[in-house]
Image (tube, rainbow, N blue to C red; front, side):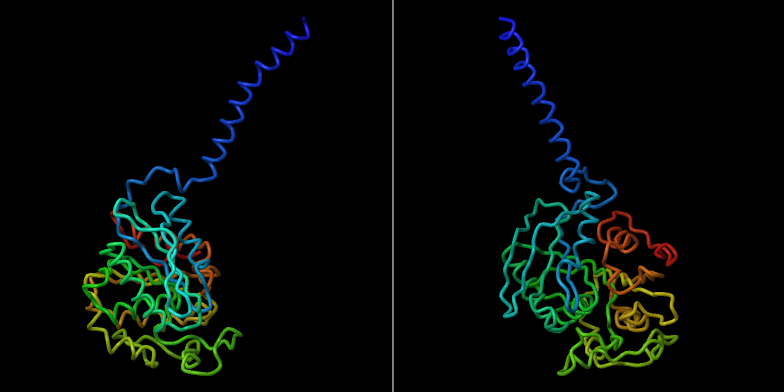
Length: 318
């Protein structure tokens, strides 16, 4: 009889122990998904305007991941769609965009990631046309890194405010090579064909003149400049660039002169234009998108803050 009582007593303990285990597991799950459950920050907008992230040369959407995660963890925005552009231009979409979504993020992956910025821009046009017609996206923000930044600029110059495309609201452009790329003779540089001519810059050879114009005008800048009057005037632009502080006046891939030449192109053509210099080791070209606290902060504030206040260059130094 005593054995039966002991057995019943142990069985009675199973229920509260089970409840405790479930609570512990539930708390662990809650802790592991802050981007899903964190309350929205009232300092940031509650908008259904998507933000599209575009990677650069020889890259992928993995280059966009840290910037996107930074916004998600803070409860500001959420990844809702991945757009995969195949080498033949076919578009494959995962996820969706709905009007009720708060600050949705779209990540773009070009399977042919060495097609060049002009081809990127044509693919972006195709993607944006689909977003407007099928998902009823009427406004769009952009975040582009490197050739993804150039492609974003060229897309807007090429299309202006076409009615079959979303209206461009904000562009956060990071390490854009608008007037040349440093020829570092790396393995991923093309050695023949038209794209090989893009690697035509040398550190400290070019400079920005007093009127903002680059002293040396490369063909890729001429392409943009010819279309400058087409740029959508309502757009707000943040141009982030890197300076390693090693005397090269560059991020190791793009010179400051090349990045800053965008100002001459867009002056008097946009609603807002601001530059930010990231200084030091974290200003390296790829490090600008790789868990870079300064870049993530400025990107997040610029795209989603209700009361965006431009900071000084020193605020970006690391």
